[in-house]
Image: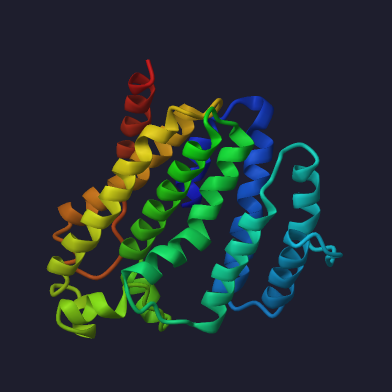
Length: 256
């Protein structure tokens, strides 16, 4: 996500680019602290939870950044509370039992990010734009899950729903060379979210090209998984930078 975000962020209008980048760092550093099991992760999540609730919060880097951003933008604090619920789910190693729980998890850890970004960029018809931003975040998180199956498994984490695994043959359905049917099913779910999110991008007041570009680059990961034989071999699906640049160029033409 970091490389894709960096490439797309260059197209954010200058008056909000620094704020968008700062907001991304808030989410990214908190997520990294949790994923890497850092000793201060729980305290940093707790501080953002307190900030989201409007209570006195410890002066963490995330809280300091949020105070600065909230002075310039109407940040929905409840969205940060929901993001922290996703972080706590990761810290607890909670299993995802069905597709509804996967959708809820994806909303918490990524749909909230899209929603807050939408508020910073500004939008006509905010309610419609919020819904589309949530769907786009969920689509990107489902893409992350499919891209990182082997990496997550090596760390003892599984983000595919338990019910879906049973439907495709159990835990072995995630093994390289045996997961094509499962991946086809999960790619179709992610593609549907991208499709439903797409009309909302036109509602943004700023940064439309950046969001279209990020969406195209991220969705291309799904196409790369398909080209790689639906997980026939272990490892991440990687979209070459040259391909990303082509997608960015096409994004510009789509907005004309």
